[in-house]
Image (tube, rainbow over all chains, first blue to last red; front, side, top):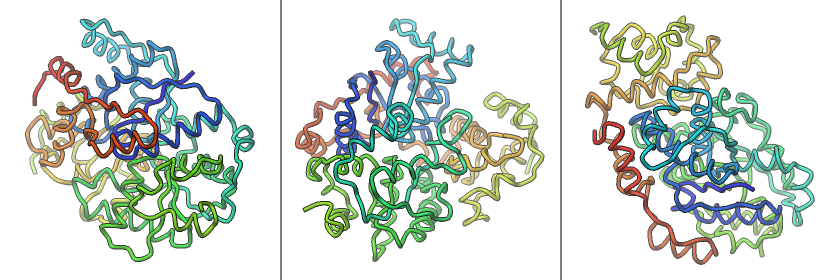
Length: 287
Length: 156
């Protein structure tokens, strides 16, 4: 049994991503619970920048709630994964910080030890469910699609905490795209950042990083992300930059849900701001 | 530029001295930094570590420290495993405490104080959630954040 943690951006801006993840989990008979008591993970960039102690405490509260359930926590976003996984490990290994957190929550009767496992759904599927079982469930393979993986920074970095994929040469997303029946585009700087974390503080830097990456992906049918922040950045950069030949941006679990036979209208694919339906229609993936 | 021993001590409250002292200024952090590649005049990790470790307080008044994407390429490639990103968080925390941070750095936290999340769920999003058949009773969690703030030195 796992507890699903959708996170702000998915719950409140990209609900289709939550639906895709739920659709995939149901298809794989993964039992999960959803808790209404969570707050923002909180954001590893701007909350930790604001006050690292508040970041630790907010994150610890989310960990404490999950610990009480006795489940593993599964996130749908690299940022949520970074915060919740790091906080969980800090609580487990740093007695001083664990005591500070438990003092803060003592009146509410909340105690936390940092003893849960925190996963990104991609890693949970890869590690705990396994490629073979996923392959069995692929009913309508996405043959003919050439896709560029963008695993994003915080899925595997910092490796000291993430402990998932190779931080400098990640391969898990590539493998998971191949399971869909699609072709993977090898390209330079796959590990490079999308640039979103500096969008509010220096838009010029942020967009130049995103565009530098997108310029390398012109020969694809789409870029595949596993994080709603990367998704937002790649859509925004193309719309703000008035890019002529726009590159579709897919959230991995949308594609997996489609390959498992889910109908596109049930996933909210029509809410993408950079059209993805045309490329899927051309490849006869949607009617 | 003034060297301040006091400032150096303040940095150390957030960031262990032993970690900072591991840096021997080889510059590999900068050579792997996607911001430095494209905007070397705006952001240079090696230089930020140098200034922080000497104790030059001006560093927390500059826009540079707000230009790190926290991608951790520098940390993964550092031969001494100095966590430049942790240093950036320490410098940003200090910059905010001392009132030098740009307004944009505070905006998101204002939303978190208001909603408990980066944003609230609009009626449009609630309708979309309903149409997709997922839970549309989405609540904000302002009071939880207020409690945590009250026990962490509160309002800043």
